[in-house]
Length: 201
Image (tube, rainbow, N blue to C red; front, side, top):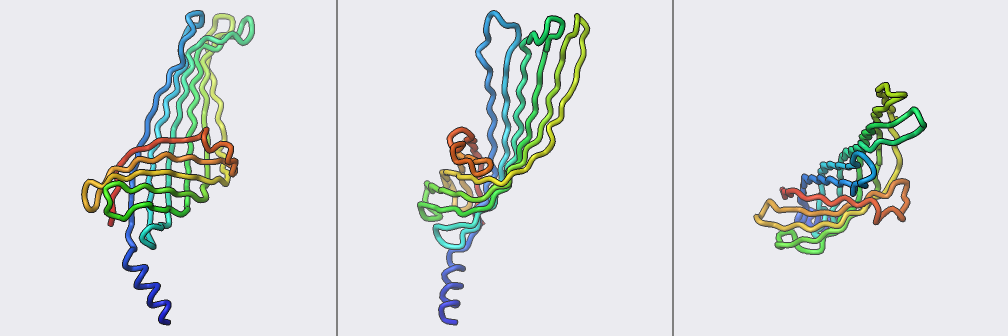
């Protein structure tokens, strides 16, 4: 009973919640070949929410959710067959990640700069759609292809920096990698950089 009481007192003295909302957006345009008509452009948008419950001073139970949309627009004319030409391809890929894990903090709660490292299990869900515009013997047409929803068990790792500008609010910067099907070789190939605000209560 004495040890339980000591644990509860220790737990209550450090327990607090850190909530962060972050956003990321990027746009990439491939270098155009002067011999090819059209462009290839990729736009990605991500929104993320993370709820970290600090059960000890430097250790938190973390829950996170993120949703990403990647749009790839290809207006390069592609000659598939002598009479069949793709004039435009637009692909939308939607990804959801729901994660649970542990967070380690490397500075006190009210330090100006708080580095963190977290990792754990993630449920990775993706689906998409591709729209095609084409010409067959000079006649225009269009079609669509749906990619069914797929879900896989994965892992995630996040490195973060929080800059506290008040007692209860700060700016948070993170780099997050999700390794689909626990393929750790993907760790450096699937990194998302996010920035946002963080609240402590």
